[in-house]
Amino acid sequence: MLAVLAFFVGGSIGSFLNLAADRMPAGRSIVSPRSFCESCNRHLASFDMVPVFSYLWLRGRCRYCRARIPLRFMVVEAFMGALFASIYFRHGFGAEFIVLGIAVSLLMVVALIDLERGLILNRIIYPSLVVLVLLAPFWTELGLTRSFFGSESMVASLLNSIATGLGAFLVFLAIALAFPKGMGGGDIKLAGVIGLLAGFPGALIALWLGIVSGGLVAIGLLVFRKLGRKDTMPFGPFMALGTIAALLAGGEIISWYQEVGDYVVRF
Image 1: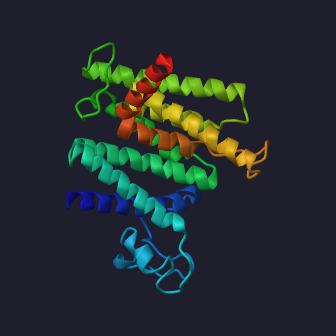
Image 2 (image 1 turned 120 degrees about the vertical axis):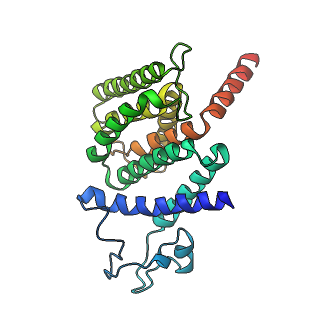
């Protein structure tokens, strides 16, 4: 029953993230006015916005004008619901649930906006950097251990986060300088956010997953001629999803990588 509650919380946040992804690039408020149909301008009732179920019940159309609702709305709600349920199964309802819930929500809205608009907004990145620097000493107390040369003190947590954030920023800056058309300024700043958020080795896993998955998708699009050699592809969504995977299953990913490495060495 509590897992269902976690799914509903995540789905509701996913609904809000859909709204934010539509409004923030245009500089519109995410608070007012409340949700409405973009086709007929009718305000939506609460029963029109039940995560996932309203979309299915209404068959993907507005209750009032029957305009089609983008499938993305239901997909994001379902995905966020699944993420929050996963966080609950791993950590229960506690500090970790809140911290990880906020983290994946931040990453998801960044991914959505970059995917649809090709933008990583400073109005999201800069406040996130400030908050993450302030939180840096407290990660271990919040259940997300950050060590530095074997120490798990508040100072160690701070040093781990700052060093990883700065390191990720500088590495991506170097990549952008070497390949100017391959990466935007938003990706560089997002790398710094990921370093502060995931720490070491989490950020290493996150960015590795982002680079590998983004590269594979780009190759696939080129092979099937959906992407030209001179076209660009948003990289932020892959960085964000890689970070979500690292935050929720970083330990399992490291164990799997070690097992594969051991197998290759034996072979």
